[in-house]
Image (cartoon, rainbow, N blue to C red; front, side):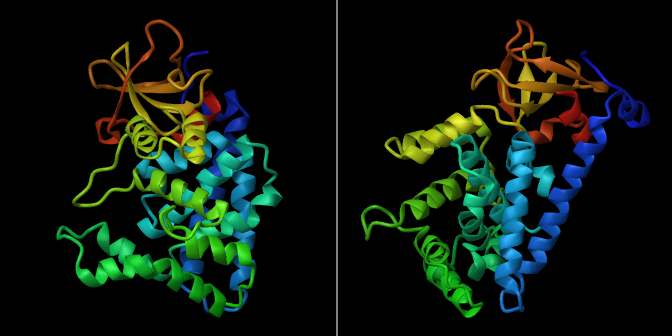
Length: 313
């Protein structure tokens, strides 16, 4: 089946649409709660609340890993939330997807995901400021960035957190091999942080396209196992990527395919630039629909019916 109608007809055609809409709503509620939580680490019950969010995030990633990947890749998914919060969620979601692909149970990821969600606790406001700052970094900003792992860990200790892995991952997630050897989990967190930062947009820096991001990671960290694992997990065109097809249509990648360069996508914009009345499923492994290139999401002017696409593909 190549297309589905929008609205009530689509819901009647596929009862899975309601489930996809529910999962999307759960992601947005999670981001809303994370925004409030990270702003008040001194609040009573902070540790328990972070652990609960970590477990919920792992369950969402397990329920639909492709949707979790789209959370990272497409800017509209988290547009209503501060960059600092979205980035923390992106890193945690990426860790969850990677962990699940490598056989980790969701319960084994609670502490690593909690660390990912709180690693930048002391510089959230600075992160948000830098997304709009046109001038180079000021010396005091550089110093805050340098010190933020230790300062974030200190805030966690003040909040009553004593878990050594959680604290160690936060404190060491910017350590490099030239210094004291960091925890393996902290080194992994650093690689995921670097990868996810490629998708962040600032006034002075445009986000990389997904295929560019994974190639840069390979080039800069050729011997790093996590870099290779990220490439295998996300591929060149992960869910959330906007691509131009051989048909000249613009499509949104929705599902991983059999190979890194053959995802399943939904065509949303025709060869002439017109928005398609109905999204059309495209298997890019088929002749005529191969991926020509990833393109900036701004080129896609058609509305994205997220829940419908995850049902269609």
